[in-house]
Length: 279
Image 1 (tube, rainbow, N blue to C red):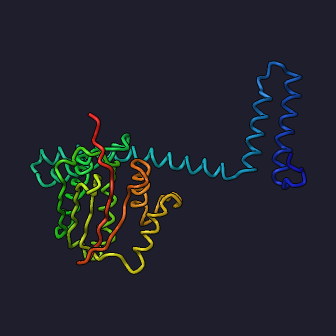
Image 2: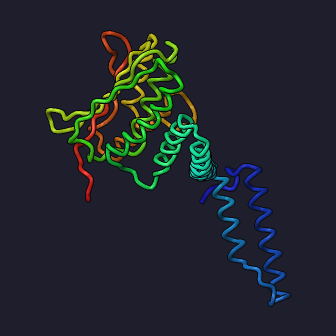
């Protein structure tokens, strides 16, 4: 039993007010038996209110969960709306004979169509590459001096990988490596088997590389991924999210790491298990 003196004035006032309301309800029910007022409901409401005062973290956690749920719903509505609208515009451009615009819109439609497959935590590498190719085709058109190369072992197409794995990594290479060079350079995506029967996907760029001290920060963040608080904004949210999903879906021995290239730029290394899709 908590000592009454230990309860602060705000809590005592709230509890006292709830008890007064409950007492009034009980009196009214005694005078008017047909009034459907639940004394038990008032009691439970009083208890939950007191527990909220005792543990404000519970309320804060619930609010964060509600916010995340709303963001999730918004993320579902917006891509579907854009997908359908862009496809309508693409068809009209094709009817008007503007093939280049129609082709670009088709890439954007494909990107949104593939990006809304959030009902599956794992997809095949072929599916993931299809999404990435649509994204990079748009970026290479926007920045004509940006080049992209692929070197994917043909036997790995059916291997399962976490959904939406590569696009955040490639986008990170563009924004933090090649942007400083006016998007002049190359991104190479490769996938191969390792000697210990795993799969390694590499994203290599010819960008400006890490700023002084930045690699140590990134390494520490990726190594202590389970101690990082969830973030909705920030420069590293993409790669942190990727690291957490790999660890959760594939195992703690797999994950994301970075190395610096001798000739400039950085390489992201993604180590994954060789798990084939179940037909």
